[in-house]
Amino acid sequence: YTPDNMHCHATFYGHQVPPNTGVLAIQRISGNVPGFRIAATGVSLELNESFDIVKKLKLVGTPTKIYKNTSFISGMFNSDLEVSRFEGAAIKTVSGIRGQVKKALREGQPGSFRATFEDKIVMSDIVFCRTWMPVEIKKYYNPVTSLLVKNGSDGWRGMKPKAQLQIETETPIQVNPDSIYKPIERPIKKFNKLHVSKKLEGALPFASKPKDEKKRKNKGYMSKRAVVMDADEKKKYTFLQAVNTIRNEKVAKKKESNAKRLVIRKKVQEKKAEIMDAVKKVNLKKRYRAEGKIQAARERKRVHR
Image (tube, rainbow, N blue to C red; front, side, top):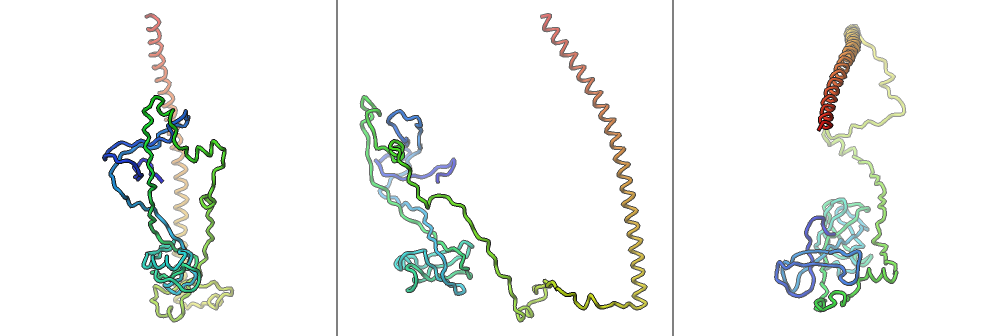
């Protein structure tokens, strides 16, 4: 988890050195190793008898029962004692709903507890708690003072790392099945449609009322009903039809004239392009001829020299 092109902090147990002392880490210094490389370079920052080192730990649980904003969570802890130590801790679901650990449950799986959330969660939600776990440094320090002897590093051999022993003894590497990356398959959730009761729908303002009309198998009476217009409505309807007909004819004539104009314009542009291409060819020939003459003159000068 070392960040690229960034410094990282390392804490280890060793002899005392003043701050800003250079540190060099090498994997192996004994034997002719073809894969020799410097593992790390750094600078010492500070000295202390005890550093507080922690690492991230994410506890995961799943809901077993849900009552509005309260739910019972199991699988996160193993005993009621652990739950009592985490009372009041902040928890969160994958969907982003925040909550808090309340009390352990007397019944059910050991380590189950009651939690409250900001909103109602669903059974498919995963609840997790972010915590920090303390890490203790092994107090082992082995100073090597024999590297200044006659043989140097060839006369001293340190402890072989586990990877080197496995290569030499041809022991297969132990693989933890939980550490293997597996494809994540998430089923598509199908949520129920929002149902609004008639009483609530009647109390809503018009802008918030659902306006989705259901498709009907049989046509309603509006499609079968005959519309009879009086004399005044007939005159208005006839006038509108005449106006629409005149407008449609004007639009059709305009489209036809535009198409003809575009054809003529395209022909003119093609003629212009042909003339420009011919002029370009003549200019290129002139330029190439002049460059050829200059090049021939330079070669003649070189020969005379």
